[in-house]
Image (cartoon, rainbow, N blue to C red; front, side):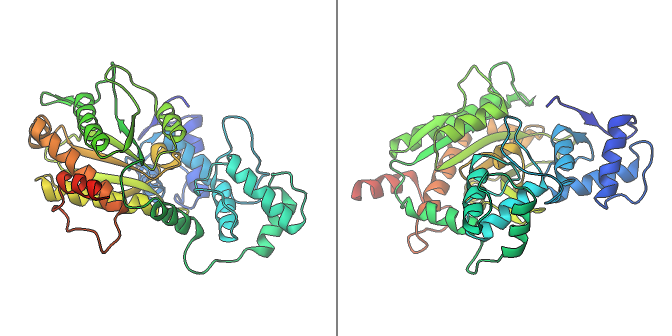
Length: 377
């Protein structure tokens, strides 16, 4: 999708389309002819609800989310089609209902892929509906009649937790994808004498070395001189069958006072779902980094960014600091500081797989502890 930016004062067909959707969603009581302050506030509210960056400006991702939000289950037939795949709240509702009944759609992400089609076929077979993998009127009627809840927790959350637990506590033989942002000619945020591309790639390399020493299989989504698109990074990550995906970014803000580290995981308030492993890992990463550095704790947050939403494995994004803040930029320019961040992430990864009785207090484990534990095994 071509990148767009529709903000205050915009008019025309696209602005009218945005205003009409916000009105239908109940976020806008009147329909002005231009994007005014009321529309901007409605966009901000929508972005907050959908786990998007809250800017009040409609970019390509916000526009796509607005279009997805229009669809309710039953508005249209749902089926697997060539790229682009069908997306919408109706798809997410379908996935959630199938999951509640024990049919494995994978992640509830609102994208109609092959796993969703397969689960529909299984459902159709079980209720005696033609097993064509399409969600039409007959299938929707059967879903409405037979939907039930499963006690003991959401099945998708139980599956994700069980998969993580089954992998065992050892880091050896696990697969982790490291995704440093930018790359090549894209230097990212460049301010206060520090380049985002260089900083995050260096952290990823330091982390790669530590993980390899612990027997982990490591993949980087890019090298020093290339910059894959976000979709290419997602496709590469999914092809590795990774246990975890860790993406590194830097942040900027118009006011240099903004500073600190934040970690993000997949979660959609609108659909009431999130990655339970991603949330736990994000919490561990955030706590370890803040315990070992003097970076301000900007907390963990659920988002629906494509890198978090479309990756099959638990994924977190770490914004390691604001390069527009002289203090954060100065810290991240130092190799020893980047070493500390890399060590904090390794410890967080290990703690994710430890049983609660074997876990240690935040900020106390060291790489040498993990290496000795590996030798004992």
